[in-house]
Each structure stands twice: as structure tokens, then as C-alpha cells.
Amino acid sequence: MSQLFREGQHDRIFKGKWYALILSHHIKALMGAQPYDAQYVQQKLFGNLPLTLNYDADWSNYLRTRIEAVLP
Image (cartoon, rainbow, N blue to C red):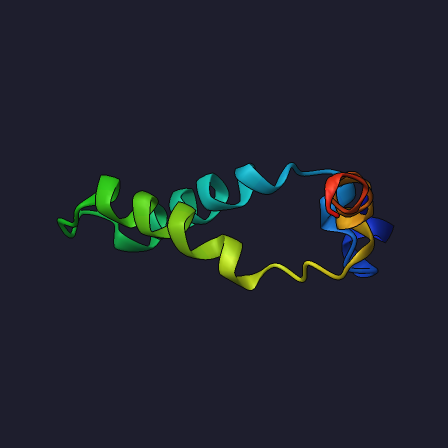
């Protein structure tokens, strides 16, 4: 597993939807006792993380081929 992390292949271990939860957990730890709106932070993470995806990467091949098959 350490080799996958070193090679930047985290996605082979974690599902994409988990990243917002992991990041939210880290933010909670950093905030400590300081009050903040955890639900708002998590909503923003789920909303913005997809914007960072590379839709031309190999992970999208499965979906892309199916979409292209139904397009005229």
C-alpha cells in the first residue's frame, strides 16, 4: 500500500467520494476546539472536489466509452 501512495495512485485504494470525508476529518482535527460549521465545510468539499478531477485520465475510460456509444 505504501508503494501506491508513493506513486500517487491513491485512487486504487480509496473511492473518490471518500476524499471529502477524509479531508473533513483532517479539518476537524486542525480546528480543535475552535467552532466552525462542519456540515457547511463537508458540503463545500463534496461540491468542489469534482472540479479537480481529470476527466481525461484512465479512470474515466469505462464511463466515456459508454457515453460515446449512445451519442449520435
